[in-house]
Amino acid sequence: MNQKDASRANDYVSRIIDSQILSLGRNKAMAWIIFKLGDSEHSLEVYSSFRIKDNNKILVANLDMYEPTESLSGNESFDYDAFDWDAKGANRYDEWIEDVGLASLSGLKVVDTKVNSCGDLTILLEQYIEIEVFLNHITYLCWRLLDLDLGNLFEMLGTGIGKEQ
Image: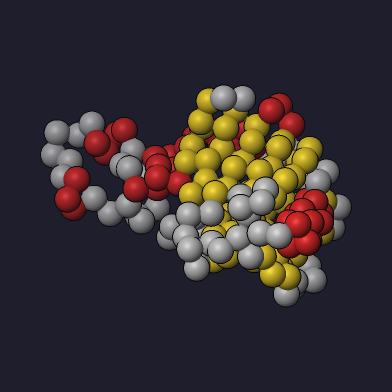
């Protein structure tokens, strides 16, 4: 990504600074987080690798979507080959959102944002919580930030090329 594209990406994502997390979840393998600032709402949609950290401890990551909850995997009759990761509440990501994520992240304020030269996105929240999104495709959409009120968006492709629409 050249300096001009990085600057444009950073300008766009900085719109969520001072906003608060309103909600988070997933649709299939896409994770989403809604940010709210006053009457304005933005949605971050993540189609690639990501993790949410508390200092240096990983709280949850994208691959947790494909792992069964402890209650499922601990059951003697559990069959991993028949595991339906997409069933609501069946995977560790859904379990974390329900049991911990919503309660611990809702209302936290965005302190800073950064898009690096590869197109990876870091969102720093209060209490030293970080959301990190990594480009892991060569040509596909990896993440996008949508302004839900105005309908415009910024998309980051795996090539590290961002585009505003």
